[in-house]
Length: 93
Image (cartoon, rainbow, N blue to C red; front, side, top):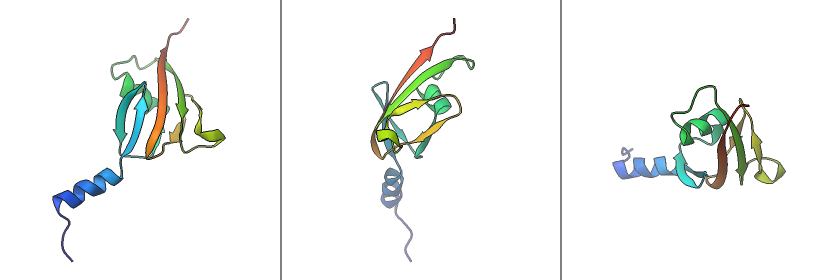
């Protein structure tokens, strides 16, 4: 059986890409489940580790029409294309 060429390997990697938008910026993930913490790190890479975020999502592979919110410790499964997130840094009072 012949070995896969570089192009075939690249195509397989593309098949595993999940295209999402976070705050209007396109991101390509190599996994289907994304966590609250990962979203915060992607959009605010230098944030205070104690920071809190407000996270909402639309068009996910989830119940309730694929829309909802995430809190610390939660995750959601994204679709191949079209899942969007709004991630806002929340200040403590």
